[in-house]
Length: 192
Length: 195
Image (cartoon, rainbow over all chains, first blue to last red; front, side, top):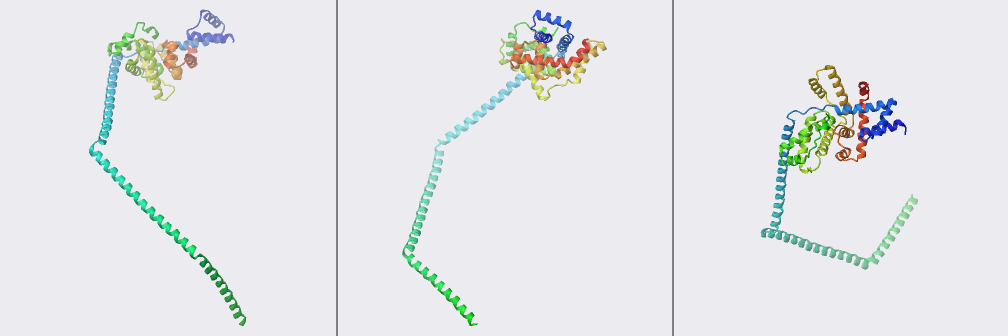
């Protein structure tokens, strides 16, 4: 650390108000020899002096009384706002409570109970009707399927060999007819 | 006499208790004790409307009294409110550095004129005032606030750290940085007038 760096540290301590007597002496001695450090310290001190001595506006004579009035008004406003808010909250709580109680008691009213039970009964009837319809349709579908299956099986088991024979005979007949037709057309061409 | 000399030395807990209970005189006494400091701080922080801003700060202080422990000193609590309020205003203005209005300079000049009739001295003082105003406005708020608190208001590092909710090392570093910026901004002026 150079001497000037050491002096810079002391300047910092002066600004922090933690400088010791020996350090202050070092600073003063150094500044008589080093013009750069002296200028640095002087400019720093003058800048701070300017900042500290900067005159702020003087408060007007009514500043205190006006501020007190303003503060009291603000406190009243705050209290009023809090009161209004508490009223709102109380009202909201009351409405919600009333709604909860009303709906709860409605459920346990005899008339409401009758209505609810009739709705439930109707629903159960509809469900029962739907179930019975569904069952009937299922039976019908399965019956038709069974019948269809049986019919196909019966036809196939009973008549399939005969049908197969008929089919082969038909194919042979078509072949013979075709050959005969082709031969007769050839003969007629030769005669011409 | 600097503002630091106006530091009240008596026990203020009674004043706080009375003000909290709605005693207007007690609250008025607290305002009288701190109004110069608060206006000065606002003027250095914001530059204009310092008196109005100081009023708003005292109103906030009054509304917050119910959560203030009377056995504790008023100044850190009041300056915490003042700092937060000034920072809020600066944020609303959405500019990092606040140009000091010409009107204020003129008002200040007029005020000085009334006090000191010498025109040359007046002109020099106004120029000086203007230079400091502009230098301050160019220091970022995060350095400006602790710099004013330490050098102008004489608030100890520990209290500044509490007010700004920062570690003490950070506070010291910010004050040092703010000082350097101020020095740089005023260097030419200081050298010119200091020789």
